[in-house]
Each structure stands twice: as C-alpha cells, then as structure tokens.
Length: 251
Length: 308
Image 1 (cartoon, rainbow over the protein chains, first blue to last red):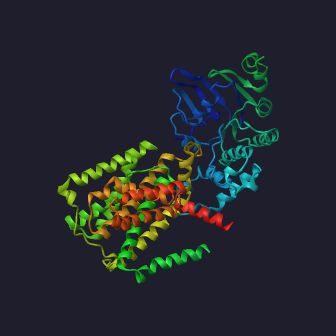
Image 2 (cartoon, chains in turn blue, purple):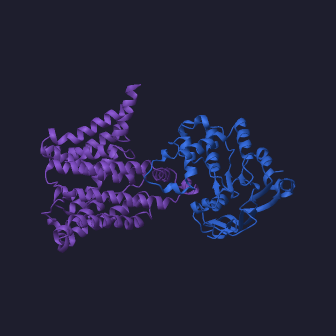
Image 3 (cartoon, chains in turn brown, red):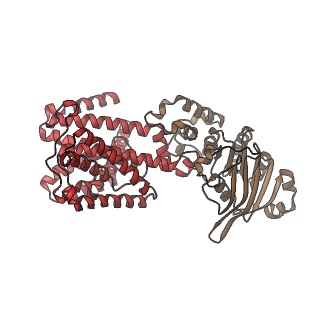
C-alpha cells in the first residue's frame, strides 16, 4: 500500500454494478478534488446510495475502479478504506442505540487508533478519547446529552450524532447520505451550518434531496439518472443545464 | 454499598470450606469450573453475538490432552497443562477460521458439527481415548508444591483460577477491544466503515473464548480425575449455553449465576427425579417468560424498581 500522489481525492473510473439483470450503476466516472464540495442529485432509484456503497466498500462493483488519493482501493475492505481517510454517514440512522452519545463518538475515534486492539485496559482509562469525543459532541451542539443513550434522544439529534461520529475521524473524504432527511426547518439549518463548517481539508460528497439547502453547500453537482451520470460540473452550470430540468426538476 | 457486598461475598467464598461439609465444597468447586466455562462462552454469545453450540469442544479437548499426556505418555502435569492449553487455543483458531465463514444459524450449525466430530472421535478412536470407558485413574497436579487433593484445597485452587478468569474476561469486555466487539455485534457494517475489522475482532474473541474454555477443561479433568466422551457432547455445550442465557448473556455476572443454577438443579433434582431434564426445562421456560434477558438483568431491574 504505497501512497501514490494524485491530484484527486477520489476517482471513479467506469464503475458498474448490477443486481442480476438490473443495472444500478452504469459506467460511472467521477473525479473529486481534495476539499471539494460535491452534491449528488437524481430521482429515487437513480443509484445514488448504491454508488456510495461501492465507494465505501459495502458493495463490490462488477467492473471499474475506485481510487482514493491515487491508491486503487477497488478490492479493499471497508475498514481499509476508512484508514485511508474515507468516512461516511448513513441515510438510515445506524448508531449504537444502547450506548451513550459519548461512547458512539468514541467508537469513531477508536476505529482509526491502534489502541482499538487493547484488551487489558478498560476503555474508561483513556481520558484523551473521552475528552476528544466530548469536544466533537460540543462542536455539533450535543455536549449536554453526552451521557444519554442514543435511544433517549430525538431523531434530529441522532442525525447530528451520525455527523459527529464521521467528523471525529477527521476524514479526508466524507460521504454524507441524505444528512438532512426527515429534519424540521430549524434542525435543517443547524445541520446545514455544521456541514458548512467542515474543514476545507475534507472533501465532502453529499446525496441530498433538499435542493434549496444542499445547493448552497455545493460547489459542484453531479446528476444521476438510471445509474448514469447525466450532467456533471459547476453548480450553476448544472442547474442551468436543460437536462437537469428535464430529469430532476421536472420542468 | 456495592463494595461492601463484594467484600462480603469474597469473604464468604474464601471461608466456605470452614463451615461447609465436603459435599458442598465439592459442589462449589464444580460451580466454579462451570462458571469459568460459561463466562468463556458468554464472550461469544453475549458480547460477540455468536451463538455457539460447540463450546464443549474446548473443555473436552483440553481435558483429553491433559489426561492422555499424564496417564498414557507419562508427562508431568506442568508440560501437559501447557500443551493442553496451547493445543486447545490452536484448535480454537482453526475452528474459528471455519465457523466464522458464517454467522447466525450457520455459525451455530458449524460449531455444533465440529464438536460432534470431536465427540465421535473420542468414542471411535478407542485405542487412544479408551472410547466409552473413558480415561480413569488420573491425578491432580501439585501447583507450587501444594497438594490439591482434598476438597477444600482444590476448592481454593479453583477459586483462585476462577477469580483470575473472571477478572481477565471482565477487563477484556470493558477494554477498547471489548467495545469493538460489542460494536461489531450491534452494527457490523458501521463498525467496518469506522475502520474496525469485524472478522478479525470476531476471530480473536473466538480464540480467547477457546482459551478460557480450555482452562475450564483442565480444572474439570483435575477435579473429576476422569474423562469421558460425554464431556464433548452437545448436551455439555447446551447446558453451558442454557446457563449463559438463563443467567443473562452479555453481563459479567449472569453466566456465573446461570452455571450455578444448572449445576444445583442437576445435583439436587437428579437425586429425587429421574427426569431432571424436564424440570430444568420448566425452570428455563419460567426464566425466559418472566425475565427474558436472564436472571441477573431481571433481578437488577426489580431491585432498581424497588429502590425507587
């Protein structure tokens, strides 16, 4: 695993994924620069989440290549990709509901540290982990709930814990799968400002249906439909593109 | 309050041979051995979400290796114990490679099948294992020159080992690794995305559980001075699993309580009832209906409700 220098944080080359006869991702090629803010849009069933699952390693593509900072990770397991700086959140909340918020974020921290293999020392002895977990929770405005189990908190707060777990890892590429789904207007603007505050070292790729909010956060936009890239480019040019209106905005 | 209770319990355990007769001391020794065994199974079942029906493999193989080496090949207890533990742990590593190809029911069936193979072998290769006759006339070791032949001395020996085992396994599950294990049990996909290697975490736990299963097996053969293929049987695995579930899987104390319950029922009820298994079944039915999470979580919930 020798690091190869590359101008791109993430590169997808001719990615293809089919479930039986149903082709969900057809020949997708994308290149994302370090620190880029990319929004991925498309109607339901366009293959957005399937694309994310291939990037994170939950699914293997049938053909094509995935490169993270120049390293070909196509055959890497999800955890190996995490160690190269990839992190993600889930459209369906995937948290440890019986554990406290602090413990959830601590797991995010632990995942990239060698001390995750430590068997002879109670986790509670690692004061630095707890401190850092609390700092991350503070950053998403949930410090006051740190000692509560996830099952006790509201849905909108769970969305922020999802974000906090990913942010704790200080990823270089962050995949956000509908981070605003199911949120009220107030929560939406909270999460929006949290995403806007993500450090510029991190490239953010976001799937989102709430165009009003998401477009503000994006620099570049990719439109998918039926598993293909329809339009890809600067935010304004994609919005102005006729095909975007046709496919997505239904005009 | 908690510390006082723990200190009282410890004092009671240490002083037991001074006020209890040999019968009860021996019963207590058996409970300690069953407790270590159940605790090791609990690492898989409770903390790893890997329900195994073949855990008797480790107890049985460790016991057989020690028995064979000391009786047939004339080894001393020290090297025999070492080989027994190393062999059992290596076997766990190998079995883990096979069993962890599956999860859930598939995992359960593979562990069951592997233990059945060993059980069959213990019966069949009677040239080595003495088959259905078992291996009798074994001796107990002399750890650090102390004889552990009396009921009391063996009990104290078992108590030290059990205390150490409890400590090591409790620290294990509360460590970073233990948190990873519980995380992989609850959300394997998320854990992988966070940088944890779920397979490796499960495999290491499988080996560690096998190691402590082997320690229980050594104590078991020292206590009984006899080993028979039944120790490798599914019944033996299932009793331990019942103990874990009845006591409360995924809790540090549950398996100890559950193992004690199974042994007490077995020893007391079987004296009066031939079909003691039936009563065991009814007791478990009761536990599952009244305290679905097991005795320890059930009782602590009751206590919390009472103190409010």
